[in-house]
Length: 181
Image (cartoon, rainbow, N blue to C red; front, top):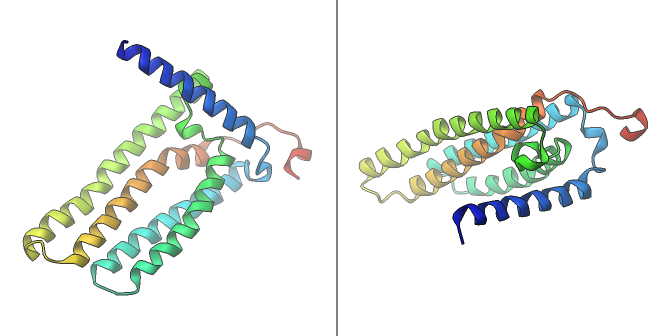
């Protein structure tokens, strides 16, 4: 069995699953598929991620109740992220076989930006953990916990960036006004 055969089968499986899920969710949240509404969802996702990172910074100072705020960030993030994914048709992580050439180009560009964002932002908690471990000789539990939350927040930002870019920039889809009800 060749690696190319495994990859091809996996891509075919991904495409099939994507198309099944697309059919399942295509009729949902029709009123949120306009560019204006998707932009609201992008801002909601960005706000929850910024809040999550702020919580990680507060945790670094040893505030005992701060980790509870992470629950608030998660509870706000999950529905806003899910709605953005549905409203934008999950184009940020769609398999190539389900997109036309222009969509593939847009998706790949957004993914490239997402990778750059991930690398840039993850550098901050990495430095925080490296230098913090040296300064505290690795015994500050608040620093370790906060650093882990920082890494998680930055990875989420980078992972969400492609869908956020596409949700923000894609034009309105073509559909009848009766479908928006």
